[in-house]
Image 1 (cartoon, rainbow, N blue to C red):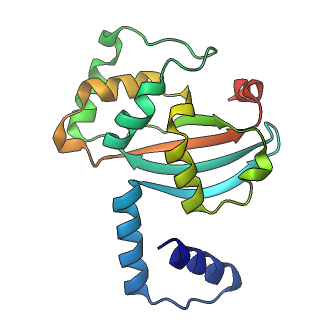
Image 2 (cartoon, one colour; image 1 turned 180 degrees about the vertical axis):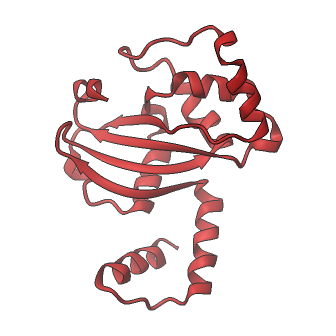
Length: 173
């Protein structure tokens, strides 16, 4: 599957498509079932000198992978009183789409990841999920955890990911 996606990404870059639409849909659906995540875009942020990605994942994955990391980042405010988020809690159970959260991972050398494909970013994030910092969205993740019911496990949570060499560059975000 990795090879097919890589071939597809190469084909897109050079304007050719060797794989037919049905095969690509099949590959994509199998990848999404495997990873429960999608990356839409990868850019380089020249201000914070970091790789910037946007993507989405399921509520279920966000609770299991991102929520445990809530208290990792010293510069982030702590969770607030639950009563302030009761409407959001009701809305989540109804199936609202929340604003994106922002997460980050620190790496020793940005060059190790600067040419990653979207699939490689997903694999990297899965492998390094214990190293994730929640930069923005602690209250939303906390409320999501409280509101979570089986019926919404496949609802989508959008996120922005920063991959940086230095923690102090994350303060800007």
